[in-house]
Image (cartoon, rainbow, N blue to C red; front, top):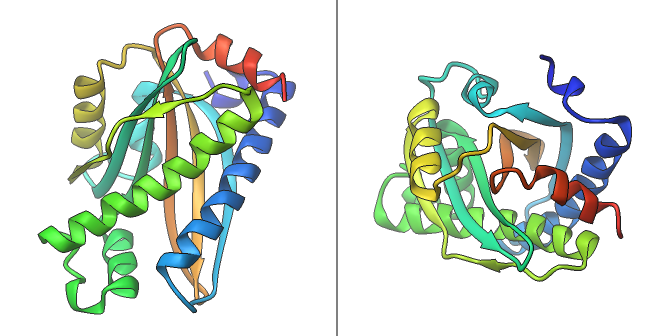
Length: 203
């Protein structure tokens, strides 16, 4: 089944609105990390996708990625939010913020990537709160650097994700005209995707 067949046109519009608000929040927050560098962020693709198809959306499931993830709960349901960057993109981002730590795999660089992930996933969580009127409590972020398939397996295992569908928001970050592609994933608790859409329609 194609991802576009999993949701209605109205639900697709809700996800686009969520993406627009989330990306607006993220640009403001990430700009403070990059100081005077010109930044622009876009969402070229928004969909609901089967969980098993997600690693392939990053290219080869064996490609190295850096993923920051956290769990967020509200009285109605829980979510897992994940920022996935190709490893080279993560290293480029670290290099722009801390030129002396561009390996993306030492302690300081890993802390920076967790903060970046925390900022971007937090921006989308704020957008969800705005659109649903619900208050979410987020856990501290975690970072995984591994092949895309292995990272997603770790996220699913550690967060006990059992639903077979998630929201996939492709993210394009342009810093001084240098493009960095990434993805924001929103994994609802089992069976709560329908409930999430119902709340998204209340804004």
